[in-house]
Image (tube, rainbow, N blue to C red; front, top):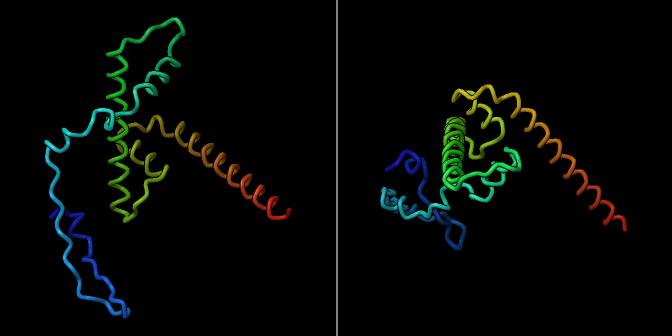
Length: 150
């Protein structure tokens, strides 16, 4: 039984009269094998090639061409990088008994994995994102109040 499964309490349904029935054992999940992992489609493991290609094209002169194998290589690398950073952030969340990875967790993961040179830039983008989200939320609230007044 995995560490995650060991922390799950058995399900205890309630009867129609509101009393709790005896706990039922939850069947143990079958382990995922390498064969199962191989069944995932390649496009499910990687970022969409069109998005990667667009970002690459925006980073080079308009006259430059990018080979298909270069796009695929970058697609694989950035997908692996995201998984690497996310797994470090998820580990931090698990230790702190949280289920949601936040921006600060990603910044922590970047720093702890040796990418601290990107921290300041990422902090700036995180602040801008939060400001944009707050402004959008305030706009929606104002529109809702305006509709309510009508």
